[in-house]
Length: 255
Image 1 (tube, one colour):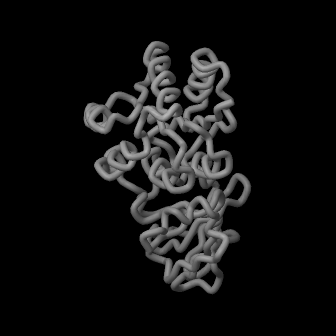
Image 2 (cartoon, helix red, strand yellow):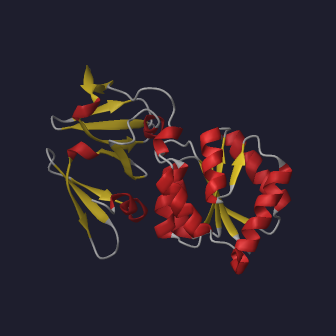
């Protein structure tokens, strides 16, 4: 039985795609339903599915970033991008012969995509090479929301409410429904959960390294790799080190 993961941050759209897949490909097993790019990358690394359906716009890692990392973590996984209409993206997908689905997803288009995936699984496709070419060509930033990233936040430390400039943040750490903000001077607490922060931060500067941690790359002094594939980050102005889970180490391969 073939396996897949479905990554879509909108719950209703994710549910609808899963239901459509059950109709179009009854023998396909959906092993994970993911609401963000981090969860998708971890699910691909864990399950190594035959196919992954990735929304391009997701909090934190975009679908393109997940695909680029997954190409190393699970080379045999075929990727189908799911996107709202964007002519630049569609043109790039068609030139690269990479499968994509436009929202709302038409049943006949999904059926054709399923057929192509099955043919490639039988050795009649070159999805890996096409995907690599697409990732090189497309700039993931083109799919970011058209809003400026955060420049400052407020967070509580005891009875004090602090105004913290984003550039001064070393990392964010999930704390149940809250988020701990860590700077060189100390810690404070935000009421916003870490998942909501992902879509507000500059993706070129802030990277998710674990389900519970987002780091400011400007605060990183060194990346330390171990033999198991995991890693730790040494910070410039903090004594602690940060664990990087194995799937996310792929994001640091050029460092």
